[in-house]
Amino acid sequence: MPGPYLHKIHFLIIPAQIISIYASYYIACTSNPGIITPENLQKHLDYYKYDGLIYKPKTCITCKMQKPARSKHCSMCKACVGRSDHHCAWINQCVGENNQRYFFLFLYMLVEFCAYGAYLCFQVYRGMIIEWGLDKALVKDSITGEQSVITFRRAFLYVLHHDRVIGAIGILAAVVSAVVLIFLIYQLYLASRGITTNEAFKWEMVEESIDRGELFKMVPVSKKKEESSGTSTAVEGYSKKYNKKKDIVEAKEERRIESFDEIVNIYDKGIIGNLKEVFFPKI
Ligand SMILES: [Zn+2]
Ligand SMILES: [Zn+2]
Image 1 (tube, rainbow, N blue to C red):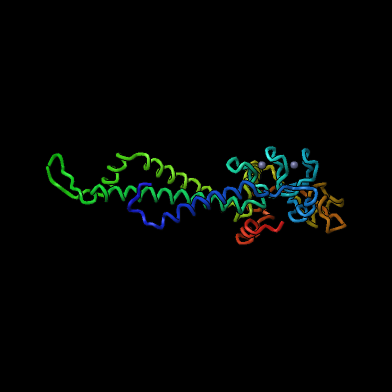
Image 2: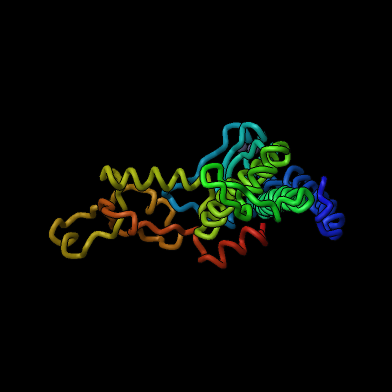
């Protein structure tokens, strides 16, 4: 890069940056996202329980295995992936329980790499301004004929006009850095709330069904009502079927869920717990 005013340290930082970005990219592309195998299936089934709302016991028809809660079958990876987030075209594989941390590392490196690239381009222009003596240049007003010291913005636009390639690279790098940063923040926000990208869509659907008044919850029948009716009003439902702790099935009735606040995300372990799970997965 034509940067006579760039500090010598950049000759060390630039190769280190290039190695880091490729290394993080390689790790993100090649690490196991958390593919469910017959060997680790039970471990997954034990780790995340079905909440009965966004995850119910199901069998993957392709893998012919039970689908653990939070997992998803990916037709491109041809496997069920544990705590599946999404299939990423950029790394050509799924982002799941095991490689989400590497995906975050790659995104961070990309943000940092592009921001650094944009900074270098800016510094090259600054060098050109000094080299061409533009920092001491005077501009003459065409109407009044008055002379004044050139502003930095005007000098910058002047060099940008004369060497557009570096400008184009710098702008591209800055835009990519900003876009990926927004994506990284969004992904971290979801992860901190104990939600995967896949689940974000599921929760949206739950919210919509609450708005339409279509979601019901099984709640124990109040004693008074039970006595008056004289018969059990137990309704066959999910909460009854999977209530392994109790031998006697309680009488239950359906109650409409009025607001999303009534819903509990059983996978949310608090900000620290959720991020710990992403960066130090236990499965
Ligand atoms: Zn599958
Ligand atoms: Zn995939």
